[in-house]
Image (cartoon, rainbow, N blue to C red):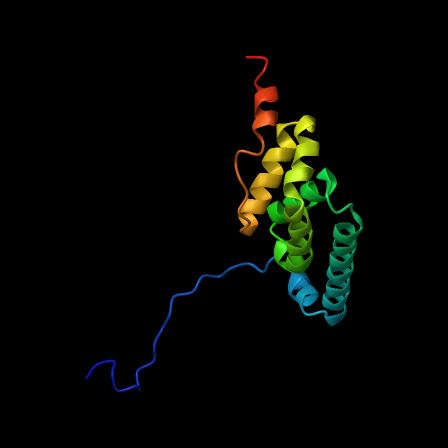
Length: 140
């Protein structure tokens, strides 16, 4: 039984690689406990800052919609699920009167609010923005 008795020495090919010019600098950085603690604190502080921005911005405003949209596009919305849900719930509760005020502002507000609310699972009529779409296409 050649090779199965465990007594044969296995020889492996290897190349003579030159040591890297970087040495173990990056390995040493990854192991620094202080650097990881600093990064965690920085992330926590930044999350709290964004959370405050969500809470402070007016409840039914384009600013809040754009902030929620940006947070979702960045892929960090899971950190702010509660705040986003609360904000969109407030917008949904007065959606018809709120969107009536913003229809004059343009199609952007209507489309953004419609998408964010639908994406969150709210049943929003697609016909509410008809006035804005009519005005947007008046130039045709």
